[in-house]
Image (cartoon, rainbow, N blue to C red; front, top):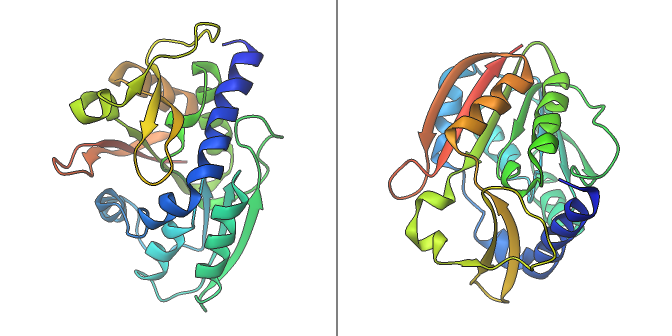
Length: 235
């Protein structure tokens, strides 16, 4: 995908979260069921977690509710409003030492952080271009400390009629790739977001890009418990 298209699609999402941060935060207050299954593969306690595309920080809240031992948490997101909401929530957790970083994971400098557990939840479908998605997974794997874990989930929205009904035509001058879509947001203010559907073939390519060993792979979340495909890997 050419750089100008990447920037335009990425800007659509930055504008989307700027417009919908309050509504998005309100609908993202509970843990995904798939996170519970994650802990079947990753023994607690953990010492550190890196959350790429952290939003309002709810994954840190999830971990804090399931282990008493203190841990370090680094959350990275491009939206300042969601990071502000994350900071408010995490400040109340005495066992969490946290650092929140505003960074565009599509366009900004490479990752340099390190953690025992690195996660990408609700992020990959917002990354334009197959090459960039693969590079992000490689970079995320590099962030994992030896013996640590990487977990990512891909949103399988295109398999649901209700999400296909929200697809709107892409502008004619944007050269999107296969399975790239613009979806209409229908809570509060109307807004568009760029989303990519990762099918099974591409999911395997993303796994291969990490260079790590798969220890769990499953579907979870949503009414039919299969809206996200999760993969958990170990370094």
